[in-house]
Image 1 (cartoon, rainbow, N blue to C red):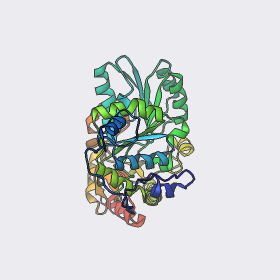
Image 2: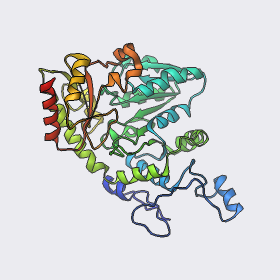
Image 3: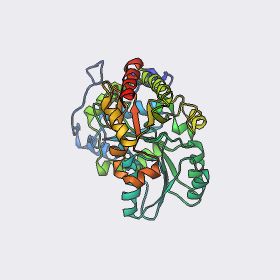
Image 4: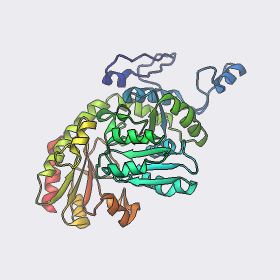
Amino acid sequence: MSDKSSKNWQEQTRLVHGGVLRSQYGETSEAIYMNSGFCYENAEVAESRFNGEAPGFVYSRYSNPNLAMLESRLAELEGAEACNVMASGMAAVFAAIMCQVKAGDRVVAGRALFSSCNYILTQILPRFGVEVILVESADDAGWQAALSKPTACVFIETPSNPILEIIDIRRVAELTHKAGGRLIVDNVFATPLLQKPLELGADIVVYSTTKHMDGQGRCLGGAVLGDAKFINEVLLPFHRHTGPALSPFNAWVMNKALETFPLRAERHFDNGEKIAEFLNAQTAKVKRVLYPGLKNHPQHTLAMSQQKRGGALVTFELEGGKESAFHFMNALELVVISNNLGDARTLIAHPATTTHASLGAEGRTEAGITDGMLRISVGIEAAEDIISDLSRALAKT
């Protein structure tokens, strides 16, 4: 096998050729290594693999050629020293936090969180004696106060799910480091094509590769990226002994998807801007539109200082609450009702009754999620067709 150096290649080229490991057969498309274990020429080789003296694979719960190729490619895309892939985005979030905290530690997080992230932080960590402080995204004084004491790590989503709040990564990174902690950024909504948290001072980036990276709603996956010391010495021991391993087949699917990721993403982002502008003009029935690329987004300037574009997620609120939201969704013909996102198809979700239902009414109010709020994951269809479907549904609402 050989690993090509891609140091001087452009981003699109790295996503086609980066990290390739070819077998002795010289296959064009990467092979699928659907095996759990590996064989050794002799006992000495097995020993050297396990004690780290010799390179190579020992068990697919640890790593596998397909996983290694995906990790290499994602690290090159992110500009990270190292990457570890896992079974899902939530497995990646959980491992990134849990591998570095212990009883008595403090963890600080932005209040605007995906419901499962909120559950980990507010329900699971306190059971193990970890103090968790939540801070409003734009409250600089709140961040200063929360990070005035020693802190193990900070977790933020930016843009957040589903209200697309923006957190100043540079500022929070500065405060986190003064508090002695590591900053973890969930970068799923922006993708590494629009935002590079490590370049803004973050220490760790997490993804659900299930979303735009796969891009076609096929399989689950997650990734944690950071410096080699953190990945190899802190995260990997936790990962290897707790077992959130990614399937080799899923890793192969993700690797193939990355080859077309930038091409698909450009259509997602173009369409996202057009749909946001369309909805923003529907003032008779649309109460507000939340999209970082719109100038009326409360944190537009900050968003555009961190992101290249507005992205493919658009959140908006209808007059009339849940009844209007459901009526609108049920009138759609092209747009599909689904809680997933990052698909080639345009998807719509009602966060209050699906993705964030577990927060409860009070929790949703604190998070700014209303009953009339809808989240659209804009796909790669013709923008005119998406807009026509939305327009028709609005007329019936």
